[in-house]
Amino acid sequence: MGMTEMSHELDRDTASQEVSREGTQIAFDTHVSGAWSIGSAPNGGYLTVLVARAMASVLAVPDPFTITTHFLRVAVPGPARIEIEIVRQGRGHATAMGRLVQAGGEVSRTLATFGDFASLSGPTLVRAVAPRLPPREACDEGRAGPTTDLSIADRVEMRMAPGTVSWPSGIKNDDATLAGWARLRDGRPTDALSLLFFADAFPPPVLNLEVAHARWVPTLELTIHLRARPAPGWVQAVFRTRALVGGYLEEDGEIFDETGALVAMSRQLARLHR
Image (cartoon, rainbow, N blue to C red):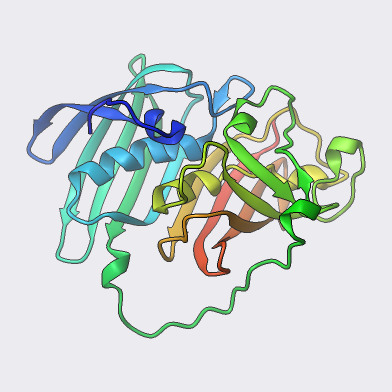
């Protein structure tokens, strides 16, 4: 995929150019944008989309079914290389590994299996239900963060369920759960790739806890299971943390599209960074 003029920010900021191909090894030049950052650190969901788009361009099936990214060091805005290895191309699934490299060092490593949601058939039973959110106009606006330096907040429009993000006002409790609506501010339709971003775009619910104080909550590992292609409008999501141990936490997410259909589930390991 070339670095051509695109109408939406997420597409422009995750574009890459194939520069070499040798068998199953494909390399891309790209640019990490500073427009999707918390403080000076580009968001992990954004970085996952960056690699996943390169993968999608060389695989025979279009949809990421499962994707796991381990973040090895902090990315910085600027040039980068994406190195893709096609592990397997099957009739229904394709698996690839991707490395995001800057200044000779590996920033992240991603393993993903792609498929085609349009071809799915078989039994279906979903017990997860969308959160009972107030209408968007009755929700709290804004994407809070442990720092006020949030360029990511300029990219994503959020409506949080009242009271579920309590810590910016100094109110702490014992409920690390939040829920809300989100969409990209520039009107980009929600699709499978943008779900990878939304899985890491909401504020960390752990910061609601009385015992949690941090300037940053960096993600060490992020796993996302996509379940369907979403309707193109808002997503509605709930995120919760049930265990904070020695400063390390898990965060589980469920994302539904505007119609209430379950479209993604996520889990990440993160830590409180003082």
